[in-house]
Amino acid sequence: MFFNRVVMLMAFACVAFIGCDRTPAVDTRAEADAIRDLDRQWQAAVDARDFDKILSFYAPDAVEMPANAPIIVGREAIGKWFESWLTDTTVSNTFAPEVIEVAASGDLAYDRGTYRFTQHTPKGRVEDLGKYLLIWKKINGQWKALADISNSDKAPEGQ
Image (cartoon, rainbow, N blue to C red):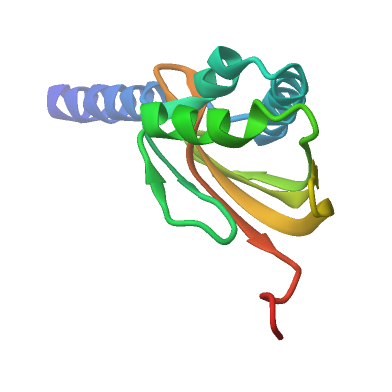
């Protein structure tokens, strides 16, 4: 009889501990909305040419893979790249997220959309349309851009 009570008590304790060990489910919709809000803030920072704010969205070891250019590694290098073209007041760069998908774990997400780049040059107006894929990672409770790649929809010159 004593043995049965001990076994039942141990079984109850195991069930209770297993039930308490569950991590709460991630609200992926709320996380996607948070990233969508970051996209809006990022676009506003690009429009304002606020380089410090733009860089705040990137992880320290982020990579930027711009269309028709080599890979750029690290937040500091990405900042120099932004300054190399965004200081030109004739430049307009807009992006529009279409899909934001958050992993069930709540620590990784991707953001897929389109972009439009225009610039007025001595040779006339330059325009590029394309698509992007941005990988977000939650670092210390904040979403940070880890890898950003864009691809032009235009064929290379001469084709």
